[in-house]
Length: 126
Image 1: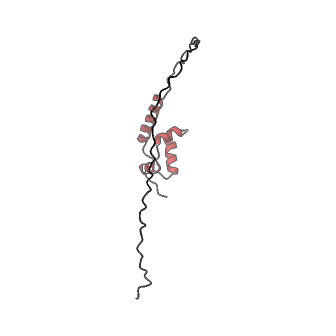
Image 2: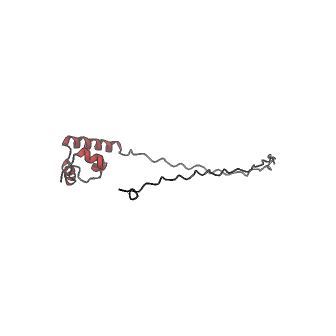
Image 3: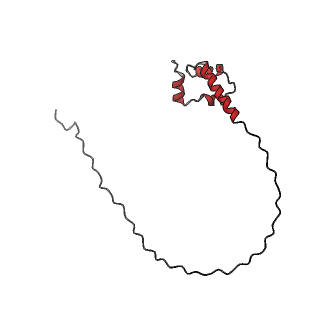
């Protein structure tokens, strides 16, 4: 079976070398090239692998979690609520709004289109 180039493989299969490095247990060029050869793909050169591995390692360094100290919980004194005196509500007259009936427009149906009848070749005399 013919082998294809790595770039073509990566475009067709949406292959991402960084994701492969992240998910693989052995992060070596030999294991990567073996993975591609099994799929009939010419592996890229070692320089491409090294640059991808460096990028992956840099991204791990920046994602390391920063140790954050947990905030100390300070107990707040409990405030006792005093009863509030409720005033009687004031009645306000609102103007009465008369609702007008809503007119519903019926959708206009388009006339049905008729297809043109095809001439059959059986009817034509030879």
